[in-house]
Structures are given as C-alpha cells and as structure tokens.
Length: 489
Image 1 (tube, one colour):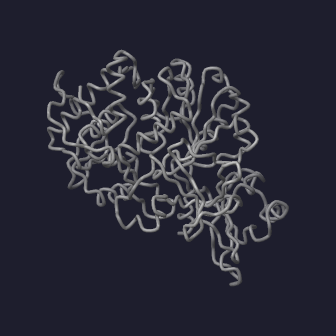
Image 2 (cartoon, rainbow, N blue to C red):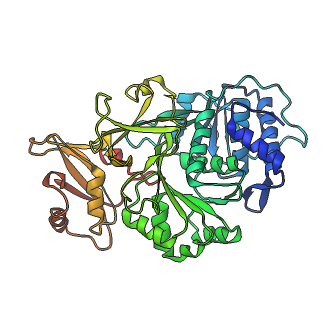
C-alpha cells in the first residue's frame, strides 16, 4: 500500500483500509465499497492513469458525476500528484471551453460528456486494471503545498476564476469542518449535493477522512427516495444549501422531523438562510447540530455558527472555524477597523488558497497573507461576524453604501416570491447610483405602490428602490446565489 505523506486525506483513507478494512466507505445504489476496496481501487486507477502517461504536475479535467469512478479518479490523481480540475458535467459548453482554454489539460475524464476537440478523453467507466495490477512505480516527490485541485468560481460577479487549492488546503478544510461539526467514524452520511462544487466535494473528503460511511444519492429532487435513504441507512447527517431547504419545506412540510432522533448533524451553506428558517429547523431538530458555514471556494468553511448554541444571535455568520483560521475586517486601504464598523472581511488559515490559476487574477485579492473575500460586513465585541453584502455589489447612494441583500430580505418578508436588487444610475443625476428591484412574478402579485409604502416603515428612504421590474425568475447559481451580473445585461 502506497504512502502519500503529501496528502493527509490519502494517509487517513489508507489507515482506515488497514485498521477497518471491512468497514463500508461508499455506497452507490446496490454497490458497497469497503475501505480496503476503496484504497485498492484508488491504486488501480492510479496505475491506469500512469499508463496513459499522466505524471505529477499534469492537469486533468474531471467532469464530476456522483459515481464511484469519479471518486477513484479524484483520489488517484492526488496519489500521482496530478492536478484535478473539477467541473460540472452539466456546465454550459461555453464555460467548459473557457476552462479548458485556461488550464490546457492533458486529459479529460467523464461519463457521457461530449468529446472535447484537442483533448484526450476517457470514461470513468473504462475497464479497471486486472486484479492485482496496483500502482507499481516509484512516486515522485510531492509536497503538501503542491496544487491538488483547481476549482473554478461560479462567476456571479464576472469571469470564473481558477482557484488553486493545495493538498494541505483541502485537508485543512476537512479537518476544520470535522472539528466543528463533530463528524466521527460511526456516522453515516447521505450526500445529495453535487460533487462539482466545493460544498459537496468537501463533504466527501470530510466523511472519508473520518472513516465514516458515505451514501451517494442522486439529488434532492425525489424527496421520497431521499427520505428512503435516510430511513434505510439510518443516516446520521447530510448537507444542504438553503434552496434545497426551501424545496424540502415546500414539498414535505414538517415530515422530515421524523428523522430528528437519528440525525446528529446537518451542514448548511453556500447562500444566506432567513432567520425564520433557522428557527424552524431548530424546532424540527431540537437535538441535532445545525451547522451553517461561511466561506468561498478560495477559503472553504472559513467560519461556522451552530443555531442552537447561537440561538440568541441567529444573524451572525459565526466565528473562525478552528484555531487554524483567523478573520478580520479591513478598510479600503487594508487597515483593520474597529468592532461594529463595516469593511471587507478578510481571512487567512490552513484552508485558504495562496493563488489563482491566472496570476493576473491575484491583483487586489490579498492584503499580505490575508485573503480578501469581497464580502462587506463587521465583527461585534464577542467576535461574531456579520455580512452586509458583496463589496462589488454594494450600491453607492450619494455616498451611502447600501447592501442589496438588506433590501431583498425586506421585500421577501412582504410576501414577494423572490427578488434581487442591483445598482443603476440615478435617473435624476443627483445620487450617482440608486437601487433597482427585480421581482419574481407569482400567483398573488403585489402592487408596487403597496410594496414601497410598506418598505417605508422598514428601510430608510435611500434604501428603497427607485426602479422596479417584474421578471419570470431570478437568476441563481446551482447553490442558490443570486447572479446579479445577469440582471445588468
């Protein structure tokens, strides 16, 4: 069995394969994979990849599918020092072509993805090496600080950026997360999140690092099937984004509460969750750790809050995830600001990227070793952090910085199905920028004048939108983040 000192993740998987070889690591449909089988398959896949001529430092594109083949290839690349560029198999072709043009991969692995011109393409389903054909070559020297993965941002505020994450980064994030949530070897987790995004891929790493069991689930679309998995496997934890919670709540009401006694934890993240939903989750799951993370692809799980222990302060995004993470708030010149004063939230720690793939993307991304998140907010005297909005999306109304999220929360509280706000030029040419609100059409469409009158009791005058437009839907990413850039087109 290979040693991989550069990868704590692989070391832990290898340890579990030795100490608990018959423990189930992964479940896909009717297939059960033990830790011994998982490590053997990783080595056999690494042998096959090496036979293709792939070597340390090469980049490969993995079109992520929630299947065992993807998992084997993902970790096999880590074993060889090959860099994974993980993409969504359902990505628009324009995005995929852009990523390939940037990273110039040596190969692409997928299931069902169309052939990409000029790139050697292989299937996750290609025949596995014969039994016993494990990796038999001497590995080159690979360092923990070498790049393991390149994850591209969703591009909500511009062109997607490739985020370089080292072996140490991804292990650090998994360790921080497990430490806060309390994941243990006895847990059984259902993974319905996509593996092409930081959240879902992070859950895979967290579970396998702890020697627990991960049940791969298609998605949340079929709630009956998801609930059946929770029941059959006596699942103790899962992760979800706020948009999924809205879906579960709408389709199942309070029925998910029947799993309250068996669920030890639920991790939530990737977008904001209204306080009323946090209170409802606390009511439905009184003894479950309800952990919500804050972070970006560049700084995964930088902060956490747990609803029950923070029940008197559900507006916060929490505190640094572990002693290995630090956070601060800085002004436009990079100087720390006092508690209670808004500025840009900056983080540093073992999970924070050191660079983007394209060097030019690093401009204005760091204050020394502090990563600039682009999020505007503040810290209170207790050390809790609060978000105001994305710095690039703040609306400058006559010198007053206005958060679109603040306006959106107020509008949604009035019963509007969904909405989004952006900055537009002041039609009177006085204030520079003013808010414009896009409202999603619904069955009971409210009158704009009524909305404005009610907002007058909730927001100061300069935060009330000047322009309004009804739209069929609000553009969002797969994880539920509003794509305001599309509203400006």
